[in-house]
Length: 53
Length: 316
Image (tube, rainbow over all chains, first blue to last red; front, side):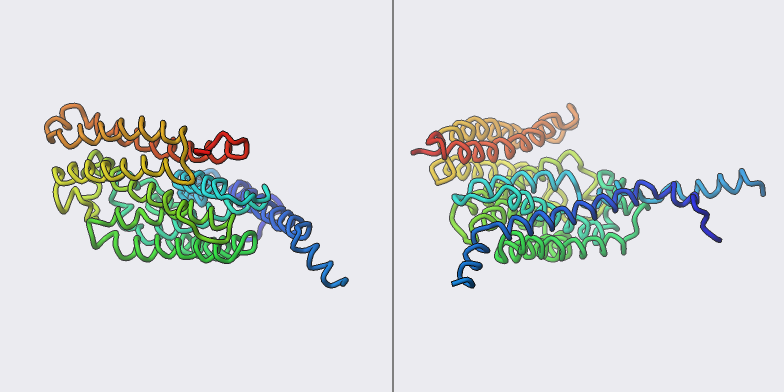
């Protein structure tokens, strides 16, 4: 059975696919946000200063 | 066979296909809300400020860890969930999600939550979350739940760990105060669940789970509720004089424990005929009160912690 461009399966699983997609997008945002917070934290600037010294 | 009949049979065949919501239901969202709230209080009551985004991530990953253990619990307990009225509609017994899927989701989310909590906060907190998942899934679900009537007592520990994890996520170390929050939830769990077991009476019998009501009888369960509630009251009021307590918490504790003790006393005095007559009215209201009890105690700890920077919280 070949899948048409808009197969019945796509409609049936739309909510599931949307949910997975949004979850993955949220995960990317969280990892990015955590990276920014960690990199802007004092630990990182202190470590950078130590390297410079 | 016409196109219409093919479409109709296809629709019937996929009627019980899982939606995203069914997979989410595997994570026991209601239990997760308790985990989120108590872990948040543990995190905010800690004497170390946490970056708001790190704090948000810590609570999120603790919640996901709690949800993962819920999914593994549903995978292991699928056979009893099919029998019990309360759990029949869960995704596995209703045929929407397969047991293997639940196990895979549970294991994947367990690993993800432990690693991400460790990276976001510290590895002590990550390891503690890992231990909590192990305790709930292996010690409680796989081992104790079906082998001892004290299942609820020991299993309650798993549900009591989140405030400790929240505290450790903030501080990276241990103290007495998070263990007081642990003890509060730990001592609260048995009367809360035994009240439920009294009015959901045939469920645990049918499933063959050795609940106290089944092994020691309903009279003994009523007495146990009273004893645990009395011990809980001493602990809850005593916590008011610790580092996380204060006048607001003490007021809440005095009022709520008086009400809770009154409810437990009434349950202990009732006969089965009394309960049957009013369809377990007192037991049901005690169960509802128990939800408010825990919420208000942790809410009061949170208020004390939030007021501390303004020199209004605590005893100082």
